[in-house]
Image (tube, rainbow, N blue to C red):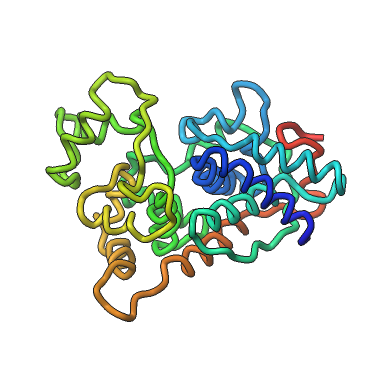
Length: 291
């Protein structure tokens, strides 16, 4: 599919050159698609209030227009060949590569799902989940602790979040008006100033302080030092297994594994979750509605 891949890459490149936040949005789109009914493009479907994309865990998702644009170009060139699910997987890869991340081969041939249901998205990983809950949600998808660290923590090396996801962590962590003790004491006042209690929930915060546009292992240093923005990133340091994985990428040894190479492997595995083939799915003509 080299010709199709170049059409998608150009669409992503054009969008990212106008707005750098498009890159992390496209990366997130794949994660949220694959976690609900597998990587089948169901996140793109619009069928009113009951759409999967209206689930709490999917609030703030964006980048849909880039997928629709690439699809329109592909349909004009080779109609009925490239699924929306494949476009989501390829666009995520291209977004990562454009931010100095790894470029990796993406297996294609996914079919598009026909169902989008908000209730099926109830089990998405949540920012306020405990590490035990995060691990079990990833395990249900066939993903290991290492892949949890790479995809959940590592995936936050680029992009932003909103104050909408911060109140519990900053103001009511255990239900007693307290803050998450994992937050570095120098960082806490800064976070509270950016996200005051009952303030504007739409204010955006970089997920990887001082490195939000570059795909690198800086996020792991931040998590280790108490500068994680999201509670779910901080939780990766609460558990012996996930802490060990995270430390392996920021340790002081020459035998450090490659974060970028391992992330690429994890992304391919993520992109293979629950793939539909043959009559299990279709190739949509437009990505936001079934044929």
